[in-house]
Structure formats: structure tokens, C-alpha cells
Length: 213
Length: 164
Image 1: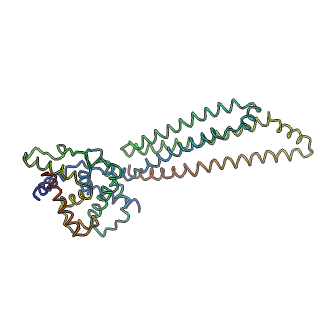
Image 2: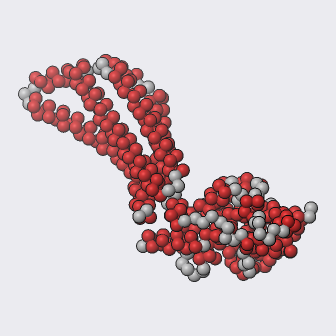
Image 3: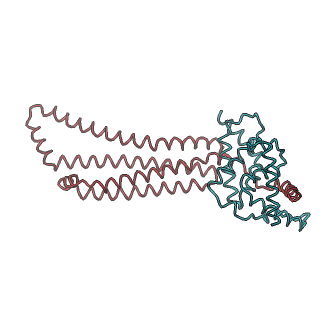
């Protein structure tokens, strides 16, 4: 077919007319998976937020809020919840921004900077959540100690016993154990989910570092 | 170890990148789509690279993986590419030895090739690359006879498109 040979001639003539891709760009392409890791961080952050919010909406525990009211921390807890939502939404926005940045960068150095940023954001997020947990735990504990009727009854009883010191240390000890277990569970939750993604990001970062010398 | 692998891959890909560019030229139009497919093929090549043992030439292997990517993977995500018109003014008209009639014919040919389906394009690509039927059959995973038959059908189809 004559036309096909004509096409072949033209094809050959233009063989070297392509804008050449550099080695750096190729490295970047094969390390593109950073953007998918960051995408997962965003997705998991949103899922976490949605799950916790729906749980909060669909399981309104009257007893719980009544107890809070009785112990004078109802308003404080409402304020804390609202503040918490705002901050978490802020974090999700940051995750989104990281994702946008990473998927549009075209230089290795910028990509590395973005990876570091993302890691930092996630670390802050985890620290924030753990800190919030500690804060709420302490507030609830103190409010119970100071205001709860059952608690004060119990305290009075203990006070009258002979071995009060021993019982006190047992009570405090069990509080600490409960706190430690809950805290470690939460910590483990974040460690497993985000730790896995962060390790992947870190590995990718190390590889990028080798290129960018 | 993995670093060596990476280095040799990047080096070979850089040297042979025109293969991928040419496939992108045939399967996409516009620089963005070209870059997207280039990247997709690069990623697929890199994923498949540990299995490449050097039994065949890097180029033969690259032809196979790259065409497979263009045919299967890329088709799923962007169905519209087959229908977009090719902007040949950008790539193909050069000032020297300008032959109006010939240029017109080449333009029409490119347009016709763009109307072929993805597998037919792969055959045309191999033909334009001066590959014999043995290599075509090896690369595309069809028999030599089948490749010949297909190529003849494609020529017929192109003629029909050119002279409706």
C-alpha cells in the first residue's frame, strides 16, 4: 500500500522529534506512588471523621449527657466537641492540600519537601488526637471526683476504713491501668493505620534522596 | 541491589524512550495525554522490569509491555482518545522539502490510522517500525499467520477510510 509507505517515511523522518525526558523525570515517574499513599491518608482521615461523627449523631446517650450535666461539665464538653470538630476538619483540609501538592509537583526536591510536610501533618494529627483523649479523660475524672454523688459516697466510705491508704492506692492504680489500656489502644490504632502509610512514605523519601544528590 | 536495578532501568529507558514516545503519538493526541500515557507506560515497565531477564532485547520487551499498556490499561481510563482528531500541524510539517500533495496525503493517512482500533494501531505501529511478522507476532502474542491476515485487513480498512 503506497500511502502506508509514505506514512512510514514520515514516521521515520520524525523519529527524533520528541521532547526528551530526563533521567530525573523517569525516577520521579517510577516513584509516583507517593501521591497514592497521601491519597490514602486523606481517605482514611475522612473515613475516621465520618465514622466518629455518625457514631456521635446516631448514638445520643441521654444518660451520658445527663451525667455530664450533673457533674458541671456539660457545657465544657460541648465546647470541646465543637472545637475538636473544627480542628479535625482543619487537619482534613491539610491532608487534602498535601495530596494536591504532591500530585502536581514535578521536581524531585519539591516532592521530597511535600513528603516531609505530609509526614509532619500526620504526626501532629496523631499527637493532637492522643492529647485530646488525655485532656478529656482528665476532665471527666476530675469532674467525677469533685461532683459525682456516687463517687463522693464511695470516697467517704473509704475514708472510714482502717486500711484507707491501701484502698486509695488500689483505686488510683486501677484508674491508671484503665487509662493506660485505653491510651495504648488508641495509640495502637493510629500506629497501625497511619504508621503503615508513613513508613511507605519514608521509604519513598529515602529513594528520592538517593536521586537528588 | 534494588538501586542498581533502578539505575539500569532508568538508563535503558532514557536511551530507548523514543519507543514510548512513538506509541504515545499513535494512541493519544495533545501533549497532556501524551505525557500521561508516557508516565503510565513507564510505571508499567518499571513494575515488569524485575521479570525482564535480558533473554530478549530491552527494546523488544519494551515494545511488548508498552503496547500492552496502551491497549489495555489506557483504554479503560480514557475512551475518548480514539475519537479526538490528531493535530498533525504541530508535529509533522517541516519547512524543508515541503511537498503539499504528499503532506496532504500523510495528514489523511494519520487521520485514517486514528480511526483504527487499539489493536490495529499496534500492528500499524509495528509496521511503521519496520518489524517483520515474526517480531510482530512475538510482541503482540498472536501467530504470524494471524498477524499477516490482520495487517491485510487493516490495509483494506485504511483504503476504505481514504476512499469512501
